Image (tube, rainbow, N blue to C red):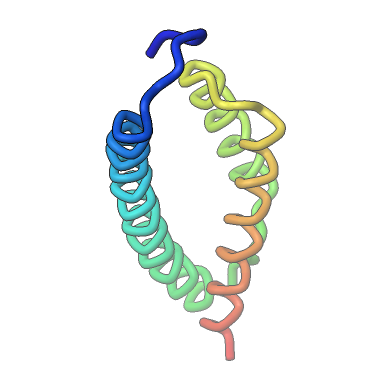
Length: 102
C-alpha cells in the first residue's frame, strides 16, 4: 500500500478485512501454541514433582531467555516486548507446575 494515497471506503473495508483475518489466524496459532507449551510444562512439572526437583531452574531459564531474545531479534520483534512476554509465560509455567505439587 502506498503511504500517501488515500483509499476509498470500499478499499479500506477490504484492506481491514484482509489484515484482520490474518491477525485472527495468527491469534489462533498463538493460543494453540500456548496450549501445546503449557501441556508440556505440565508434564515437566509432574517429573520435577516425582523427583523432588525445584520448579524454578535458573540455568534453564537463562538459557531460554537468551535463545528466545536471539530468535526475536532475527524476527525483528522488539526485545523489551519479548522479555516481558517471556516473563509472563514463565510466571504461568511456574503456576502450572506448582499445581502439580498440591
